[in-house]
Length: 272
Image 1: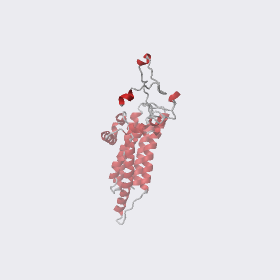
Image 2: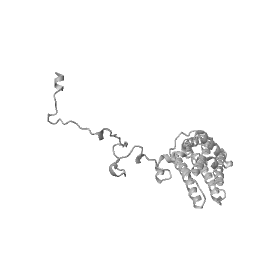
Image 3: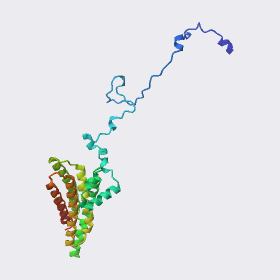
């Protein structure tokens, strides 16, 4: 039965037109055009023209994730532009802290020349704020307890506000003022290096704050004057070496007395 149906001619049926393949089509090579993969959905804000307008080819970075260059004004608001100033390890920080305790070498700028950091400024200033607030209350209590045994413990919260205002204001504004003054006088200045210098100059006050707990007024003044001298010499001598060759002695002397004024203020306010 199957063979008999297969032998029936179908050329007379409606719509059965035999396919004709020309010789010229037998040897035709079908080349696939080069694929150009595109991302979806289309980028409506793209600047491309023609039929590809609104699409973005793979491999092209999107504008939203493009990193802003550090020298652009937008880099001020980009966290990545500040990453280099926190690229320090423990050994580097400890070495710079030790340098602040030996101020007479005057080579601090040569140590930080390749990699000045802001980590020391933030960490030391914040630590000093809490140390002054806590130990200042303890020192005041011990001094009052030494003179009167009936004194009761009380914590003065205003110490935190004063310490934060003075320490952060001093560590940020004084280097900033020196930067503009030296620039105005025609000398080269680096704001980050100045912040780094003044930041590490405050470390000695953290150490001396523990010694100021001794309830002896004369000994407290001796400790704070030595501390102020060390910190003042560290700033003044390194600043002098930085602006060597320029007649800016008045700025060096002013930096010395500013550090001494800070030391006297710490003693008078937090350890009266």
